[in-house]
Image (cartoon, rainbow, N blue to C red; front, side, top):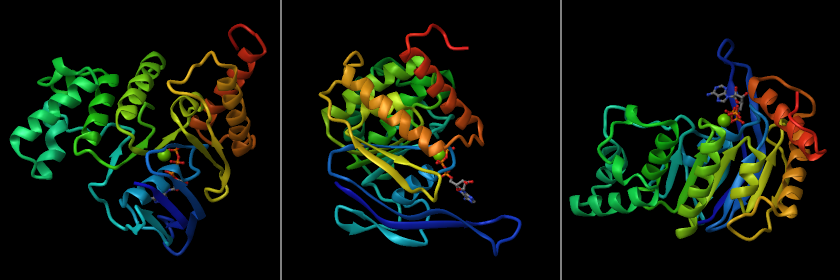
Amino acid sequence: MPIVVDHISKSFSERKNKKIRKQVLKDVSFEVPDGCFVSLLGPSGCGKTTTLTIIAGFQDKDSGEILVNGKSVNAPGPDRAFVFQDYALLPWLRVGENITYPMKKQKMSKADQEKRLAELLELAQLQNNKNSYIYELSGGMKQRVALLRALACDPNILLMDEPLGAVDFQMRKLLQIQLEAILMKRKITTLMVTHDVDEAVYLSDRVIVMGRDHGNILADVTIDLPRPRNRSNPAYHAYADQLTELLKKALDGAVFTKEDEDIMNFIRNSEHEARGGGSAE
Ligand SMILES: Nc1ncnc2c1ncn2[C@@H]1O[C@H](COP(=O)(O)OP(=O)(O)OP(=O)(O)O)[C@@H](O)[C@H]1O
Ligand SMILES: [Mg+2]
């Protein structure tokens, strides 16, 4: 199912003085065609999560329209699944129960729930963890359970807010491979928010770069590379360089938060490596 974001604007009132409104998104438009994987890349606070949650129907917009399969949507629906950055799993339930939770809400039969659960656990190689409690899992496993729960009811659209943000570097690379394999089996229209240039190139058909000026779209880059992506392909690095330059432009030297600092450090390190340097200071 395609998504159309049509001229959306959003402002929030200040907590101390409700009359003062801060505009976060102004006239933002883009499209995610059916079955495409699009990433939203941009500095901290530029409005990525706000955009994603408006598409999900979790919050209202001031103006503009979200069209899903040509129909205007204003509320959450089973057609759009959401993966939260902090997993949002139910810690008192087992892995299997977390994944079947949305199936129960959809009133799927017990037999169908079990069948679907087995398929999903196999997809993410979690067959042996069906009865584990969430607190017994590593960060990468929790991340996979959160993804499986989102896939549980076979959504047409997957919205992910930095789904791999909380796991370490090695696990992140592994999960990127698994995520791609899962999504390649069934082409789901996907919009993913990320800070990570490499992740965006590895997973996306297109990368939209958002700037700090009310979520203005600085660029929309098509990643024209065969899948699975090959990190040793020079064209892969050319895309990463192009996006790094755009991200730099989006930051414009203004570092406000820890995330900005992480992005700037990432950019400095990758430039240092590209020049053939050893470990950056
Ligand atoms: N409910 C809210 N009330 C007031 N201000 C908000 C609210 N939600 C978001 N904002 C503000 O809107 C701006 C954009 O926030 P948003 O969470 O969309 O940014 P982001 O691009 O996802 O950032 P990050 O990369 O750090 O997650 C920020 O300045 C934030 O403080
Ligand atoms: Mg965010």
